[in-house]
Image 1 (cartoon, protein in one colour):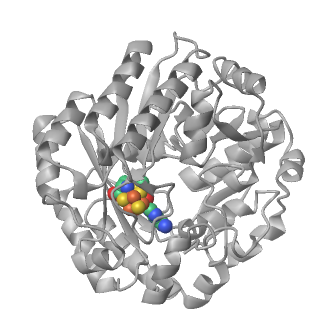
Image 2: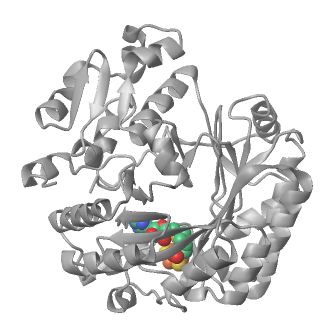
Length: 459
Ligand SMILES: C[S@@+](CC[C@H](N)C(=O)[O-])C[C@H]1O[C@@H](n2cnc3c(N)ncnc32)[C@H](O)[C@@H]1O
Ligand code: SF4
């Protein structure tokens, strides 16, 4: 698929990533203790009923210059111990308000680098969860790992703690590219890690993460990396577009000095990797995820039943309301969002005072719930039937238009550029259009204002 330079320039504008609606920069300060408890208690009676848990481990051995995550270097072991103690306290406090008859469908450890800390802490947290709640059949228990810090003992302990999905951050197989962004390569050959995991437990799934848009990357080099990845046959693979947000992450300025690839080159890397992955039998999910057809997400895609949360794509089976723990983490409940404080010391101090470390909130109005549904449908399934939305919420199409600020004129450019069709109130996004799905979704976001230095660009 070739994308015209003019189209690229036209749509390469700052747009929210829509990992949530409204995006996290709309969250408001303050959440009184009693309101927060009520917010959690109410979620017991809301859908989805399953519990998804997100645990944030912010520590890393060193900081990669491109990193956009909430991460910090490990300065002293004692801080990790204090953090884990606080994390467990927070979990116990929130669990006190959850209905014990609900089941856990998903646990996700993200970071930072969860495997940068002693595995005993992770075992302790999992045991705490397993003692309090029953799990659905085949829950997803996932962990993000930096393979630079992964060895077989650590992997065995994670398997023993019931992990069945491992995301390995590869970024690029070229060690020179990694070196220039302050990152160490995998300690063990990645193909051997994957074979080992599958031999130990054939039900384990592996994701590999890659980034395009780093200094020194080019099409040939990135294709070499993706070719190497395809040979390893991960169940899922993600090609993240490097999100350059130096106003939030000062260390990213170093990459500007090293020379960032142009948007055109980024698009070329993305498209050629996409072509190679599709030729090799991977199915595209959303903008940048690829899955083997036998993967649960591939099947959900065919049935238009994909879901999404801050942790990525999931299926109806494992979807739950997300209760998030740890510094900066965001809970995603049916009625809204709650975000924890972003500073490690304040997090620990607040929890140790016996308080919830919540800093921001976003309680959704009925209208915002409708907008969220519309944006999720577009982002996950590349289509939208406005009549179905109207029927689901028992309103008419005029009301949907009023709530979203949408009108047909806003779609004119997308239609004439072959990015989508709009017939009988139904949007079908084309293959080319799926690359600009964030732009299409923004037409249904009544609060979207195009602004530099607020969101990363589309490409
Ligand atoms: C928390 S990290 C994964 C675990 C581990 N810390 C690692 O680096 O391997 C999550 C993923 O986010 C992606 N990522 C981090 N910063 C990014 C950025 N600025 N733009 C796009 N993707 C980014 C990387 O691909 C990374 O693998
Ligand atoms: S990319 Fe991963 S290892 Fe690198 S700084 Fe970010 S969280 Fe840490």
